[in-house]
Length: 232
Image (cartoon, rainbow, N blue to C red; front, side, top):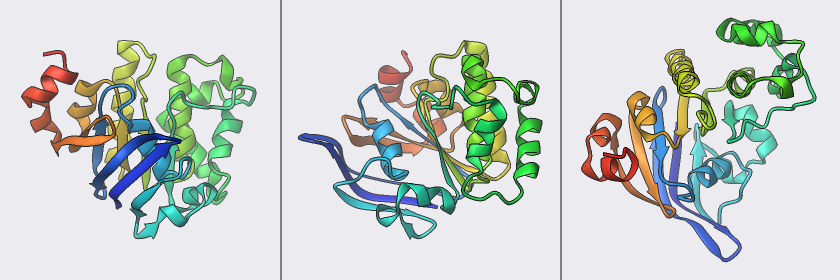
């Protein structure tokens, strides 16, 4: 579904991503793990067109994303839940969700009902300003907004950031449920143990390079991963 080949990305003179290649197949959860500054967010931003690559290939459903404007990428059914959520704080919950359907308004009411069924708390707070929600509720809103576009694939960037352990479990449960309903997920996550526990496969990024890749459960038991990311 998504194929990246020899991707290079820079910020001015800083070479942030060094020739990485990865692939995600239909129906998978693939985790991208690594320390702060490893380049994980840059990879997601480059896929969704928010950051331009220096070189390399990015293909989604056989479409060349490097030649596609960010505003058109959502039409390809590729959604992005960014780090920090980036909800619209002065808009209501329902207005935020409606923004997720701007590219294709067909079936908006049905999609809204589906999101409310998945997140009852959002339905309870649908008239409330999004900026007044708790951190966990804002994360649910960010995921719900992405689901309004009926995506084939969602890029999720640090969905557990700043949440209590109880809410982290809830968010990861939601991610698994979304995937069970047929949506492919590329997950960037600092909580390596949780990310690997729900993923099919994973890539470990270090200073902009893929240093380890493989089956997620095998990586949970990899000595290098345990030492560097699992505190074992």
